[in-house]
Every structure is written in C-alpha cells, then in structure tokens.
Length: 388
Ligand SMILES: *Cc1c(COP(=O)(O)O)cnc(C)c1O
Image 1: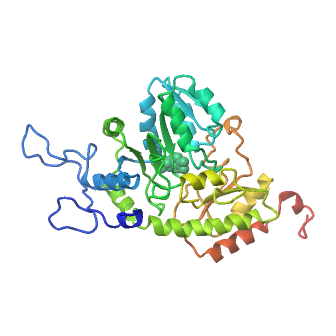
Image 2 (image 1 turned 60 degrees about the vertical axis):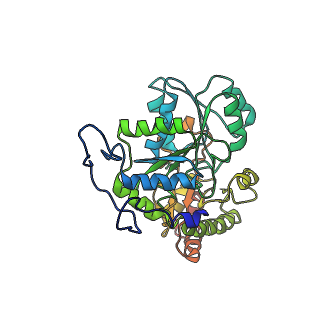
C-alpha cells in the first residue's frame, strides 16, 4: 500500500470484537490481569496502551518497516535519543531548532555529555568532527529555520565508518516524503506537533528506527521516564495523519507559489526554500526527498521592517510552530530560537521571517503578504507622507 492508502486503511482496533473504523481511545491508567503472577498484553498505560500501539504501528509503517515510539513532544523524543549518548559525545548540526539547542547546551552538557556543533553539510568538517570517538550525530534536514539540506546518505556512511549513530530530525519533511532510515540513518525524529498532527492541537513526538536493540532502549526510556503519549493525543494524531497527503500537497503548492512571489519581490533580499532552484540544497533535497514542504523563510535586510511586516499580516497568525492547516508567521530570532544566545546563532539573520503556509485559499494568502509588504522599511518612514 502506498502512504495515502495506508494512512486511512489500517487495522484501527486490533482484537476489538466490534471492529470500529476509528481507533478507540483506551482512556484507562491500568488494565485488569488474568492472574496475580503474570501480566497480559497491557498492564499500565505508561508502559503500553492499545491506542498508542496502533499509532506507533502506523508511524513505523510510514518510515518503512521500522519500529516507532511515541512521546509527549518532539523534545521528549529528542531527549530520549540523547540518552543513547549518556556520558559520551554528540556532534550536532549548526542550524537547529531552539529547543534542541537548549536541550544540548543546558541539559546534556551539564550531565557530562560532550556536545560539538559542526556544519554537517560540510563533508570535511564532518569527517574532522567524527575522527574523535562520537556516539551520536544529530542533524536536521531540512533545517529549522534556514531550510539547510545535508546529504543524509553520505553522512550515514561517515557515521557508520566511525561507529556513531545518526539521528535525523525530519520535522520539516514528514515521513511519507522523506525516509532518512532508507538513506542509512539509524534514527529519525519528528515533532509530530507539526505536519503529522497538522491541526495545531497536539504536542507529540516520535522516534523511528529499524534496529530492534535501539527500539528497546527507547521504549525503556519512554516507560522509565514516563514520556509516552497519552491515549487521547494518540487518537488526535491518528485522526490528523489520515489527511497528511491532502494537507501536505495543498500546503506545499501554496508555499511554492509564495516562495516564488517573495523571491521576485523588490523588498525581499533572500528566500530560503528547498523548492526554489536558487536554493543551494535544491538538487540534493530533491534527490533524497519527494516534498519541498510548506515552511519557508526570508530576509529583508531590515529587522524593524521584518517585525512590522509580521505584525501587519492578518491571515498569517504570529505563532510559533509550523505544519498546521493554519498559516503562521514568526521572527525566529525573537521567538522559536530566542533561547539561543546571539553569539551561538551561527549566522541566523535577525531579520529572518519564517512562514508556515496553511490550506487557506492561496489568493487570500498572497494578498495578505502583498498588503503586509506595503509597510515600508523603517528608514523610509521619516520621509513618509504622514511625517511628524
Ligand atoms: C518543533 C520542533 C521540535 C520540537 O518539537 P515539540 O513537539 O515542539 O517538542 C524539534 N525539532 C524541530 C526541527 C522542530 O521544528
């Protein structure tokens, strides 16, 4: 079955005699046991729940035969992955989600994990970093918010040669459109809060792997730390997943159009979107993925103009997160990536605007951007008609 079919045609309620088409929400903390000495399939929801297992099976199938573990958020998923490098060394990409930076710098490092940040799109720099014994390599492709692309296949080979695990955070490109495990990665993380849910009403995260031992260690952490996704959120995610291809196709079509519109606009100095032929990672991204996504970012050369533009938008809500049916705009340096000190932002432009494009009518979205861009750069204000 292809993903669009698989996402709606799956066994919704294994073992249920009434054969519901929608997975029941097993809203229970504990399950009664047949005997006092042996456990059945489920005993306690922190350790396992049928609604969560249906979701995890679906998520695993999307990554092509892997195991999947569902967590309470993308950060909980990433945190469980960093446990695999306990007392060891992590090499992470430069362009990273702000929360991931915070986890590495303020949780992992104080716990004694050595963290090195490296441009993993640079083969030489990656090889140099991996020449030292490394447990885990963590990279986003495309990255948030600069939409940088790394060669996952080449990086996976390098990691294998040095005995390091490769984890790709693919939150910006959902599993039906990019399968890092098939490209050689050991682990894939998604913030399911984004495209997988698609409606902005759940925070969730998932780690997928083809390795049984890695799966067992992650499932152990999920249970030991109590970070398993609750049954109702699992149900919402299962519901959202059914329309992933429909949503993603529409959102991506809109994003491609708006990226081209912005690239041609005289007040926009640079657009970052892997679907544009001018994007440095365009060919590579197309070679390892079948989706450009619906997140794009752009620069104006003027922080104050970027701020006013985002505030002038009416349809694009000023809100962090992305991948929802609802269009959203942020200033990453001031919002999602604020927790990263300025000196560690690795070239993140302060005037960067990030858009997540939704499923509204494209004409309305474009008109909204057009009207917002009319709020001119700050220095022109002083010579404006409504001067002091
Ligand atoms: C949002 C995001 C996360 C964190 O996910 P949450 O569900 O918000 O915890 C991790 N990585 C990337 C790339 C993200 O965009």
